[in-house]
Length: 326
Image 1 (cartoon, helix red, strand yellow):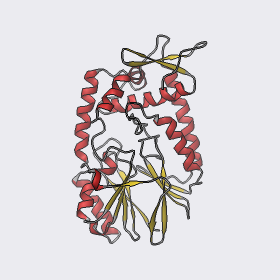
Image 2 (cartoon, one colour; image 1 turned 60 degrees about the vertical axis):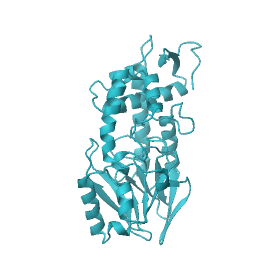
Image 3 (cartoon, helix red, strand yellow; image 1 turned 180 degrees about the vertical axis):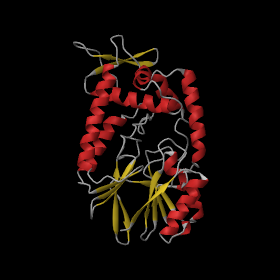
Image 4 (cartoon, one colour; image 1 turned 90 degrees about the vertical axis):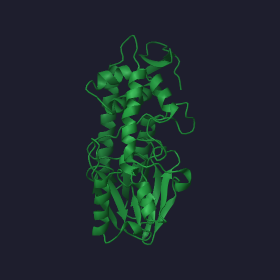
């Protein structure tokens, strides 16, 4: 199976994004890059080097629906005429922007984010949304966990790896244990556990970090030999990265818990202490990181949380502590 990485420029701080061309019948593109002229031209050049054109693409498969990964999906689909787009049913970013729904506002309010900050975050993400076209429900098909994407020379197994987003998916070629992991596995940084409504009950918060730890462990069961990530170089020692990630997550959680004062703190309070220099969209990513670690600490009995004036306030447990909220 020919898996061809193609690096595309993005306008985002993360830098270039890796998309993957499976140059086998049916020709498949995993992720598409953002909706920019530069990314579109780089994609065409990558296809040209593989002696292919956009019109040869029959499947577009999304690891997740952030703009740097799904932005060109609709344009590529339309140009390829009969290409089918696949995305997991727990994703929402291919339909609308990251903070477009009222459920997102409700989660930010509960996290203690001031209303003027929420309005600013939503404006910033409205701009980010310009780098992706929305897909209607009848313009894509659903990826199913443990299903297979079949090719003339083999198959890729779909592995639902929630964490970075609820519907993030990885794809495993079991013949040689190669994995295409999107932003689930990145060589240089740990992915942000983005604050999201729970896909089953949108009034609740998706427990992103706990789910992410399960996803990392699940990928480990395949004993990967090579993991292609959404950004940066491929990972050829998954065991080392797995243990490095666990250490980094535990160190960050210790730091987060230490920032909770005796009087208690919201996730917004903790995020401002944890990332004092965060600006623009990074403020949303900072509060996402804080919420994820506070949730995990609360689930492990290190913190308690109570609702006060519509905001969740975390406190360190002493003695019997307080009842934890789901």
